[in-house]
Image (spheres, rainbow over the protein chains, first blue to last red):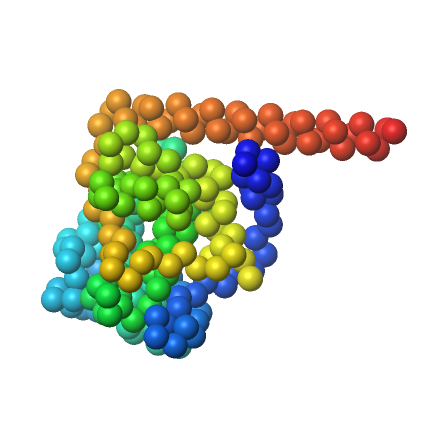
Length: 174
Length: 55
């Protein structure tokens, strides 16, 4: 297992191709991630979101990014709020749009895509891909299995350089 | 490798609370160790490559 993890860390990233998959048709759509600034607040409709994203965008210590499909950039599929810490990236919030939640969700892959993006930012800024976040207790095991996240203690979790590299490869390399 | 598909009945939302000093220090120690390990791996790799070239 150790050998496999080390090998994953050697992958080269040469093409940016991330996508999400339509639950019903299994068709995949290329996505793009764009930072939201205060001037973009009008794009956020409070009723569509569980968290207060307008306050998040106004908070200068945080960066908020939206995930949308390349063909339809005005429809926000998911949002992420991150903060650059001393030696890692901290994920404050990750949320899928209302139509991507519940058993009738439209697209698979929105949260994974956003988490992979946080890893990419971490790597690009010299933090080796390290990303810290809190998980709901019931999701700890799921994050360990799907993202390769490591439990620090309780709900505190992080992605190390190897898990991050794997996610970056999965989402940003063809 | 494909996309990570969350189960249909599970919504992966993250809402983190601020970490305390102790938790941040613990993570920093882990990060430092990982950086050292990565450097050591790179050094080993370059040494092995040099040995191969010499052989």
